[in-house]
Amino acid sequence: MSRPATTLASTGESAREYGRDGLFGLLTPQGNPTAEPEMRILLPPRTSMLCARLTSASGELKQRLADYLERLSDLVDQFGDVAFEAVGFACTGSSYGVSAEEERRRLSEIGMRKGYPLLSAAGAVEEALRALGIGAIALVSPYPSWLTDVCRAHWERRGVSVTSILELPPAAPQHPIYAHTTAEVIEAVNGFDPRGAEAILLTGTGMPSLRAIESLEPARQMPVLSSNLCLAWALVRIAGCPARPGSESRLYGGWAQRLAGS
Image: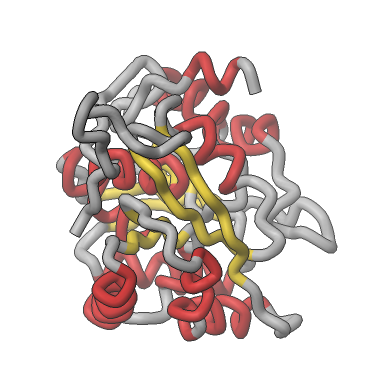
């Protein structure tokens, strides 16, 4: 369902002023400070991204996650008639509470109406695990315990073995998920026993992950994945851009220089 960039008949170049190799939409939770900057680093230079916020009036995290998925069709409409290659739903927590079939149905219905595919971050992680042949993961979670439990159940329903879980302590009372730092993540994971896992998954789109991946993957000698890394990889593949392994990641590299300059 991907939509190629409109081309100029005389030159064959994209008619877009920006994003000539791909134009993507991103929907991210209202308080998330990480997904947008990480996606801008991960997406190739000749692509472009437009962002909108997932919003909910609820003060409870569990209800907000449900609201984001329930209201997703209306939230996508914030983009109007923009012709994207694809839109990324950058909220893994909203995916944990529904079956794979239900999520696919909802995303497909919206995609058919809009004319481009919608990809969830959780779906992109699942696709990346399949591509790497990974059936067992160690989970690094910034979530409260109840959401970590739901996350684990989500992956086990999909046939992925969760060998061990590292729950990071709340980083700050006001922003227990979003206030984590790269240094905290690296220090915690360096002392973590993955117990036979084939990869480490830094779950959630709000915890900083890119510098951690650069540091941890060679040190732990196994793939280190994050929700944002997998979502960018999946979006880039839809647009037909190269999504090759690199020194930064066995899944998807080529972004180290952009990260260094950020």
